[in-house]
Image (cartoon, rainbow, N blue to C red; front, top):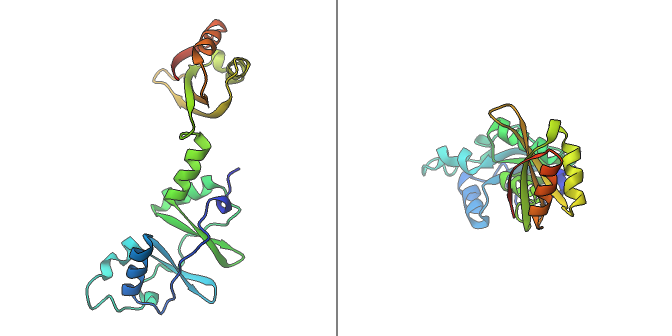
Length: 198
């Protein structure tokens, strides 16, 4: 299982509740970041983000201390949680990142970009790969996978969708290989090859 701790940013830039809106904005621009944990005595007390600070951009509000404008009790995650769980929280709460807390202390931050990178790695999207889209005979995926492995296909990832006819179609990404022979073998054993991309 992919854990948050393997993908989170640990080289943290933080601010204090006493810092001003203006200084937080400057720090974000300087480091090209959109999330700033607000920390006091090594403990997370809040969070400010590019969008949460937008209402305070007028000259009279730029001097406000962050303690007056920060998000209190931001949604956080444990470093041992899965990347899937982080993605679910980010999607559910429509947020761009999660402070990572271990035993009450801030140990990292994980953002949408980090999660996307993890999923790209998991799916093998950036590796040189080939893809087979198949509808297995009698929905027996294992039997189809055996044919692929026997033909020398090294499986990177598997995705699934339901066709308009209610059949399960599997998208099988394999390390770059000649798929024509494997596709013929699958068809010979009764599996339906919808398409293949080499």
